[in-house]
Image 1: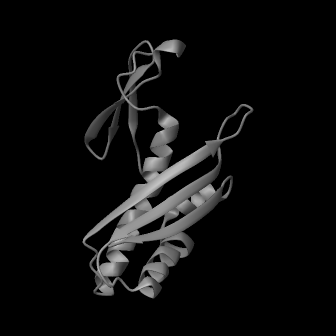
Image 2: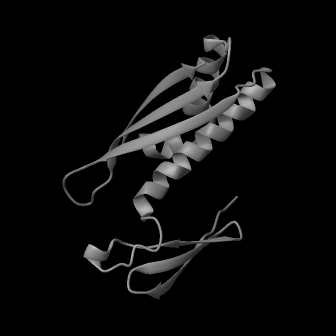
Length: 138
């Protein structure tokens, strides 16, 4: 199965991106010729990782009959100093809210996502160290 996205140049450093029949604009900061009309491409890599693993975790927890009151994934990455700059370390925080959430099941869902299901994690692991943490807030 192939995935295709279409990236069309608008002007200066702005591009309209079509992905899954949705359109977004990506752009650069003004200091490098953009007009700051949309996100930069590299942070969207973190969005892809966070979205992929978040969907996995919720799907797995649903099958385990675990329903947090809320769930958030926070992803941050450290870039290399030299070009080509890429994320060499990526931190993933899984933040669950709820009472009496079973840590063992949360850990299992996160581990299954990271080690088996999330294809974005698998791709990024080739170049970056992925570090995750589970936080439960009541």
